[in-house]
Length: 135
Image 1 (tube, rainbow, N blue to C red):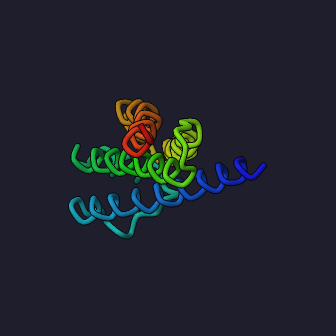
Image 2 (image 1 turned 90 degrees about the vertical axis):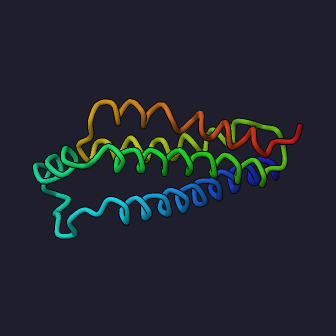
């Protein structure tokens, strides 16, 4: 039972650390590619127009943030459980992936961005796990 609780706490900590990493990279992206602050997020037409007008670099910064966040989540989860168990790291990446998918439903995005979103979280969490797992 103790191992299960540690694994759950590790996943939660991994998700929190990954979310912080995502926020930091997205903050940098917003500084590099500023968007008007007076946008109403409930106005889907305005969001579509803004997303369509964003430079590719702005969207790539979002993907980079998500990849780094999943990588960090995998690393933190693995470091906390102190085992080579991959599942907890993938669970943390999966939680972040679920948040990314929810984001796709809330903000209109190009198809390539949607596909990249779904494909990047779990491999990044796996890589994070591999980088810190005991040999």
